[in-house]
Length: 461
Image 1 (tube, rainbow, N blue to C red):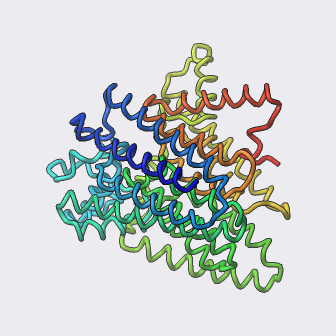
Image 2 (cartoon, rainbow, N blue to C red):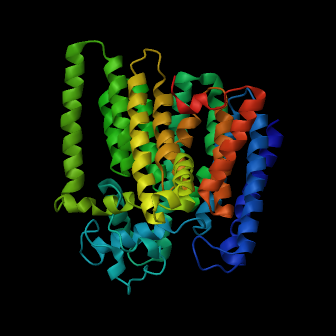
Image 3 (tube, one colour):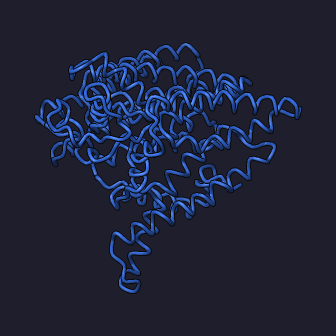
């Protein structure tokens, strides 16, 4: 059994190494590289990765020896080193991080107020995605501070700037593996090996987290760490870690009510509740103020976030926004609407629907037997499915690390399905089509098999 897993680990290593042919073999200068030959090549490599990943999981399911953990982690390290050595393929976001930090370190401006578009002579201008150059910094101040620190260390070196981010991603990834191992040891020891494997060998997580260096990995690291310390009843520290996640990327602010409601349920003594909540409010406020202090120039520092929130694209609509868009589009001639107007209606409509679903999810937390990790997963996954109007494959990093923690029916299949969807989106270029096809396939399968494949992922019970 171990020999077969080692062989599959070597096969996956080869497939990851083959990704290096995309920038070097095709001599592609763009990120992501776009031409038909590259897309076909990437599709074949992705297919090889997914088949190997799935086959290895079938073997891991039968493995009872906990020592297999070492093999899983060793190969996770090998995969990561390979992806560190390959230039970013699927996204140029890391260059955007570097360039935005240079607004402060090189030009002495506030990156939350000054966009990168005015610095065309900068060394990193042509590396950074041009479509984002009009927008000031949209991430949280903790991520901005990390980026500025890297910029001071690496200065004008393209090599060292990239390497610092990739080394950070490597450390974060193994930090997540550590906390997943610890969490599963508490909640589901028998599922430990399978859960670790699903995360550590996941091709999409490795590709987006290590090769493309998306800050989603650090954001979700703090969420996973916060979940662990919540389970260990270190409530103040868990809320602080969740705040760190929000200060990387704001979307996880949606999880604060979940944590607080479960915390309210956990602490039965009223005086202890008051003590914890007051102490947490003071500590979190101080940390938030200190984080924003170097950049604060009024509420204008949120203009980048506001600008990004208005971005919507038909090619990047998620599942529910796609259906709503098509429905309104079918009424286009009757309603006399332009495509821009339709997109605005869709953007507002999906946020209203998600808000209703969100508060319904919070209401369900009052149930005594509600699952803490599952509810956090449902919130982030729900936003992706119901509200995302500019969905990217790396956004799946928001919920996949939580999905591997849930030892429930269909969750391993869910992880495989969305790993496949994320990788296929690079080949077919239209995320909405990939998700709609998958949804319809599941719907028909559910109808003919008379099994509910959706209920564990919708959470209306």
